[in-house]
Structure formats: structure tokens, C-alpha cells
Length: 451
Image (cartoon, rainbow, N blue to C red; front, side, top):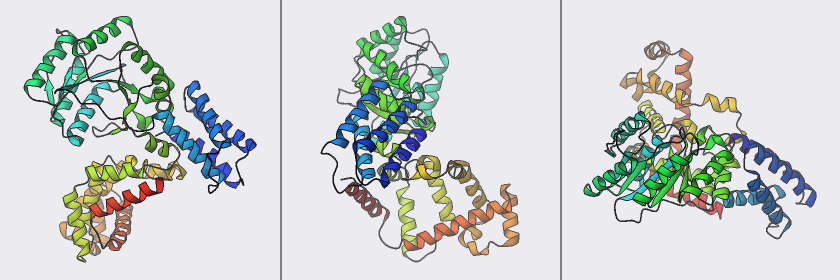
């Protein structure tokens, strides 16, 4: 995510490391490079102009602390300005309404809106313990209704049926009334995607908005369209009182122009960001964390929160107790850890949150992928339970049988065993404390470092 921008900014700011202090000359040269990096990232020109002006004022003013090196000082200023541009802090959904709170979704066709409706429903259900219903008021694309129904069934969301003969206003009103009778907390209404902004379609969604008076009106936009995402969001905001934006497909966006332009151009906060195709790949948008990721510092807090939410705590505590009692970490434990990583969205989503990953060559990153996880699990599945519990048994002929059983080569089995031994050594060092205490300790350290 935002790889191009991360690389350019990191390389630019590194050049200041050898400087003794910030001067007008090295500030000018650095800001010229930062400006080019932002323009190449397809950030809107007014945003770039204001951004550079504010960083320049900070660098030449009294904000730079004497204790910081020039490189650190400039990184601090750039990070601070990135946060300001994207909105200072996360703005959550406002659901303070007589139930059901109505959330209306708008967006262009192809932005991932219908999938995002389901993702948002799942997020509210999992993270805020809300009872959520969904309905499609898209009477132009028959597949949209079926798609939303399938996703709702998969996620145990209440789905309210609709058909192409109905008017969008009637569909929405019927669903709201049905949600009220079922005592749901939230109803999310999907609307027809638009290929472009045309008067007829905008009039339709304006009439729908006026008829149901939603507490949240969210614009779903594809981040890969760059600054066009911000321009389109502004056009919608001129027609509808938007309360926020959901940025989709950020995992495929190497530039970052949309994330850095939307708030400045529309005045509306980005509330969520889509970071993958999986149904759990929707995250609240935290400007400070995104700024850290753009500058190659990772998002350790985000990674910890993801672990806390998705890891099976009961299994984790069992593993901790097992290790504390002196019982070894075996291949069955290793398999469970690999499966937990899969549930968290795979290796790629975790790597993106680790500090310094921008410095790792892309060919090395590509070797660590989600297919590798599945292959390692397949190798372990090909073993007997005795072999998993006593890995020292796995020698020559056993290795050949295991490779044959999972359809892989002998070197694949050896590689997996080597990685297991590395994990086993690490686990031996973990003798005290439990998972909850460990997470609290890491969180506390990260926050204190940020102050």
C-alpha cells in the first residue's frame, strides 16, 4: 500500500541524515523532492502546494527541536503534516439515532460498494456488537441484489429482499420498517452505482436521501483512481450531505493520492479503508497510522489490535501455558500458528504494518506470500500425528513420504522444518507472562515512544 510514495519519501528524507542542521538550502532541495514525490503519487495540486508551504514554515520556524537530527526533524514535520492533511484523528460512525440507525451508501459503479456494504456490516457486528441488516436499492443491476444476499447469508447479516419492479424509495422504507420490527441496531442501504455523475441518477439518490434521512451518508470510492477519487467525492458531496468516505482497494494502490487528497478537497473524513478482497479486510482509517506507514514506520498498534481481535485467545493461552510448563513447541502448534496467520488476512497484510518493510527488496517480500502459508500447512497435514508431536522422528524416508503426500518437493519439506526450528527457538525464550499481558506491554511501549 502506497509503496511508490513510501520509497520516494524515504529516499528523500534519508539524504538529510548527513547534514549538520536544517538550512534554507537543504530544506529547499528536500521539499522539491517531496513535492515531486507527492505529485507522482497523484496527490491533487492544491493539497501539495499547502502541504509544502506548511512543512517549509515548520522547518524554518521554531518547531524544530534542537535534540533532533535534521533527518529526524524533517520526518517529524512531514509526518505531522500528513496527519493533518488526512484528518488528524479517526472519525467513527455516528450511530446515535433511534434504532435502526440508517446508513446510506453511494458511489460510482465498480468502486466495490456492494462488497463494502457487507464488510461494514460485518465490522459493526464483530467490533461494536450491533445487530445489522442490509438491503439493495439497486434496481438497475440484478446481480447486485443477489451478490448482497449471498454475502449477507455468509456473514449472518439480516438481508431484506428487493426486486427490480420496486422503486428505490419503497425498497428502503420497507427495509427500515422491517428492521425496526426485528429490533435491529443498524440498517445499511446499498444504492445503484453510477458510471459517471449524471443528473437523473443524482436526482434519484437525492430523493432517496430526503425520504429516509440517514444518519450516515458514506461515499465509497476506489483509491486507485488517485486524485480523481477526491474530485468525484466532491461532486457527490455537492449533491448529497456526505458524512464520510470509505476508500476501497488501498492494497492495490501504490501511489496514495486519494488518501492524501480527499479530506482537503471535500472537507469530509475518510472513515474506513479497504485493504483487500477478503470480507474482513476493512479497517477504520487512522491518519496517524497511515502517515507512519507512508513513511515506512509501519503500524505496530494496528497489527497488535488485529492480533487481539482475530487470534483465538483460548488456544494462545493454552500454548503459553504449555511452553511455561516446559513442554516443547511442536509441529501441531506450528500448524495452528500458520492457520491463525491465514485468519488474520495472510502474511502480506501483516508485512504492510511492520516497520522498515519499505527497505526490504520487493523480490524478498514476494517470496513471503500467502501461497507459502498454504504450502507449509499442506506439508504438516501430510505428517502423522506422531511426527507432528515428535519432529525429531522426521528423517530421510519420512521426508520423502511427506513430500509425496502433499505433492511437493523434498526441499519444500526441509524449508518448512527449518522455519519451524527457528520458531521453536523463539518460543523457548518466551517463558513468562501471558498473551494479554504481552499485548498490553507492547502497546504501552509503542504509545510511549510516540509521545
